[in-house]
Length: 67
Image 1 (cartoon, rainbow, N blue to C red):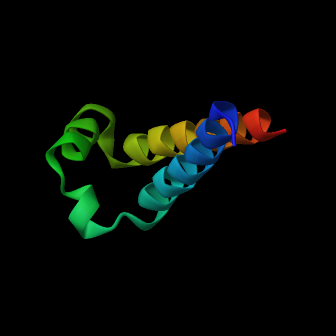
Image 2 (cartoon, one colour):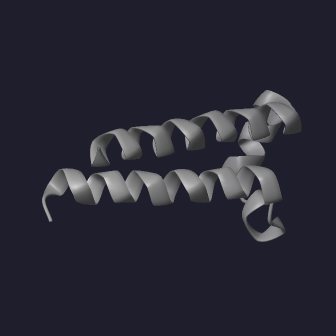
């Protein structure tokens, strides 16, 4: 496997994980200080939208690297 394949799979996995955190909001992760900082700046709904966009962009970028 070359580095672009590894990077592509990493981006897909990381993007899916980010989307799951945005949708499911697990308490152990959602209460972390950095995420709560985002919540204070963007509100709860804005943070979910931001994480959704970042996760979707990571998945899309990973898929493009794999293709």
